[in-house]
Image (cartoon, rainbow over all chains, first blue to last red; front, side, top):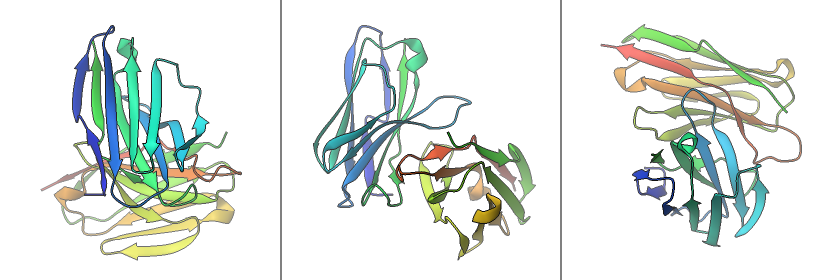
Length: 112
Length: 110
């Protein structure tokens, strides 16, 4: 248990669906992150938030839309995804932008 | 950007054996972390070690920043050590932008 939770743990969606991934951290951290882990590829940073402000959008397609309503919660809204978006989506948090990052268990997404 | 190479890509051990995993990086770093990803996908922090040596139980890590590499030592391996070990680094002004290696897949057999 790392203090970072993610829901759902598994998600199957069609290309026309809209869904959201949720991340919550119970560590009192100020920075939160979304990563994508595809098969046979290194983890890729998608978005970074610090004190609810987005500080990084790593060239992510607009069909992925992040939201950080407060420092404890982070969402990833998904719409009109492609099959190649199937992956493990990991959330992380850190005390600040320079601190050690702690990861949630991930959401395994399958796009049909 | 910075390049991270991990070796070996795969490693199979018998329970009780020792092992050394290596991480080479192409530029000076501000941050280096070792993670263990279990078979269910959970990433667990092992070490935050931009330089020097740290130990935690059967695991220890050494980073030689001037020579741009880090080593993770696992002693008396157990089946629960199985999984993928990742090295992640950042450099430059963005301390948060971790670049991950492709990992070492460790299998420990009973």
